[in-house]
Figure (cartoon, rainbow, N blue to C red):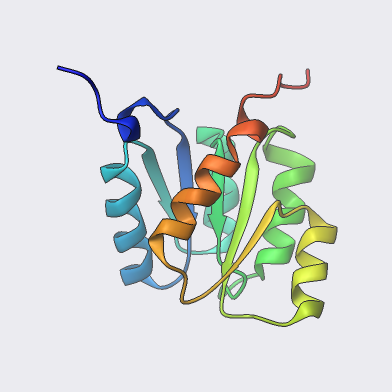
Length: 138
């Protein structure tokens, strides 16, 4: 019996960060159903701690968090806790060009605007493959 193409795609450890519990739970279910491992955080500080412990391949990060915005979380993750090959994807309700430009400036790799179809999230995970397969810096 041959495997489906979905099962042949590289699996990632995905950190899902959002203060909306329902959004985190739904993304976690869908991500794991696609063969990835999901870890979760509900605030910026928690995201940094979880990233430090788990070293995720991909971070799906909301911009509007209660304790610090996603821009600051991304900046800190890039500076302190994740290797350069970690792909950080904004999933946010902020649709403006100014926010998108700021996201790219601080280190996001992708910017998705809510509501986002799960097929687009999966595509972002696949697009992140080139980031996560790059050699890690020492």
